[in-house]
Length: 286
Image (cartoon, rainbow, N blue to C red; front, side, top):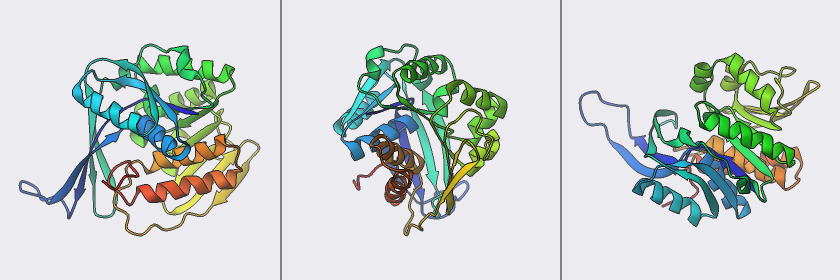
């Protein structure tokens, strides 16, 4: 079973019908969705495999209750702490599917305890870089990764955000990679460049999956091993929110089932292609 550690927050997705008009009305469709990178991965993994686990700190408020209920209904075992308030992200999606995110993580960084039972039945532990950006969640998650590794759990890390990498610094992110030695790292080409990741320079990662928009996906491994996979065009792209999380879930669930790398990438591409045709990080049409 996959376990993802990090944020469970609300996505307020603003789908613009045209460009923003300053100082007046701008027509848009606005929907509220469950969000947070780790929660998204857990949701998609549960949809694909039937079960997953999410661990995080969620606000002790009605919004947190609602978001936890949504995850639970889709087969996610929700664990962690309840303190403070639940965060929100305003996602502004333009007509070409590009996104701008205004982020308030609320209490999501306050995860300070780890229960060893949260690793029961876990075979893959997925960590977005967001979960390593602040204390106390960073120390908590690093401890969980080391505990998981001693149990033979596959460790996955998503580099998450160019802005976050710049905030932490490339050298610090490289040090995290060396310390955690993840089995799989997911990143965009821009995130790889910002971190200094390249074929032959994986900084402790065992395999790096590099997404590059409409350009081919590259998978790097030690000893200068590289595989390339084409990306199929998707018609009617509405919103890219959650596509990277869906890609990670699709890849990891196939990988955990023992499928070859080609099938892992195919599974990842297929679910990501479905997600971008819907508003928010979901597979539900309503």
